[in-house]
Image (cartoon, rainbow over all chains, first blue to last red; front, side):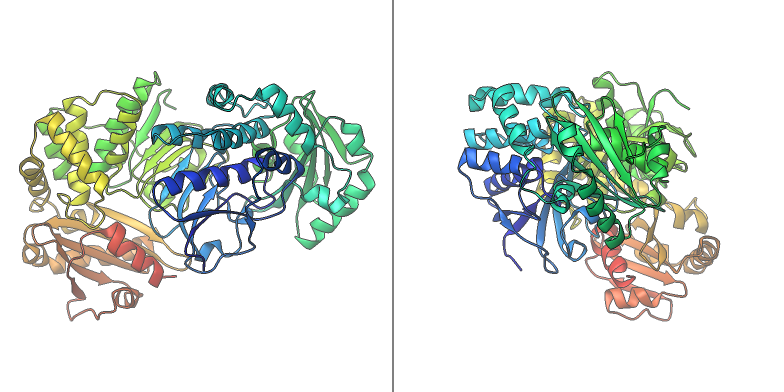
Length: 309
Length: 309
């Protein structure tokens, strides 16, 4: 067991999960609590770009926690997205911007969720409320996370608070969100070195309704056709995941960050749930175009959960 | 369906649930949201004392909410403690100081929990953070709730934040917590006009572990023997609740607010869970004395939930 409080985001960490862990470490240390940001999976290329830009080391990779370990969760709360062994750990705090599900504790805790576009925006507010200095490094981590989660403030998940925070963070860091952010997002779209299995696991989240278990994986791209050309390889990897994890269906979302829409591929015995959810038939390639849809959290997961009830 | 956002605390409302609903109504209206505090049960005498002192009407009583109703929960989150129909309502926000369990949403929401002694202490901070004026009425509601939940700052649930808030609230209201608060607590200990069934339902909360369902009811008193003299009548009422609600056990807690300890009575087929939890045998009256124990939330519910796993 680690004596320090371990801080982590979800499995298959995205830029918000990694950045918010590091930001939270700074905040918690400010209250004289020994804490350490860790991660539950490999960095994606977008996050690698951010850490390289800041000349920061990646947080240590962990796979599980021991019984009684003190932990703080950022950017998630659902058990399937969290560290193995979490139910035997002691959750001291959660800062998150997702729905709440499959989360329970025996004792009271600190829990702050807001329906913002990004966890880092909530942390930005906490820094200000507590009078903790936001230096250039922390500010860049915040800016990176917000740009990533809101696709340069264009996602429907983006709120006024995210926009205001980015404005202030541009002043603090001296960065232009449109320039730095676009470079960062583009760095994340390079899938050339990944296998099909790797691609569908880069940013995959598992969900459970009362009767169905499914995964929604998402990648960003500047060219949907480029990713879709790997369809056979991707479908093979999806079929394997469905069998291994006994999923009812698997949805792979290819999101065009320039034109802000998405093409999805859906497989699995209950893929009709996806058709029902979006009121649209899958074509002969098990795919459909979703115009204006870019947010898994706001535009995809809720409708799938509703249809999968 | 009510067009206004309905704000309520838990069933069998205590002073914190009622006061925090009214306090939250004021805060939410400050953000130009149409909102109305309501309640899920009868007022106890302590809360009646507070509202009479402030010359305030009791919030309207409701029994259920319609599908799609916008609601805000204070002082609770667990489904069994909440309004009927809640799973079909839209929970916009939660402000609470209890553990999180049996709570899920489809969409992101505002959720603020802190491990403080009282919900009103969290609201006190929110008023200050948002620059909302705390007038004498709101201040007295806050002070009353904190004194009630922390038994005049003597409960182990009481935190530094509760103590600091009460100090500031004494200045705002011109009240002395030790004088006003003791009168308020004493008003709540008069059980003479209640039947046995009413006594065990004044402040009853239902809990569920994976295998057990149980109720922990609590009353405050200045004289444990006085309440305990009604044992037969109380046990009769408890047995009926156990049968009606198919409980594994029922714990009735008589808390001495002067000497800060409690006597409990435990009934039900699984009352041995209570003996296991406190590592002490029930006597021939199905009762045991718990020295220094006054907090259901911190000293009773967690050990029972652990033993009932």
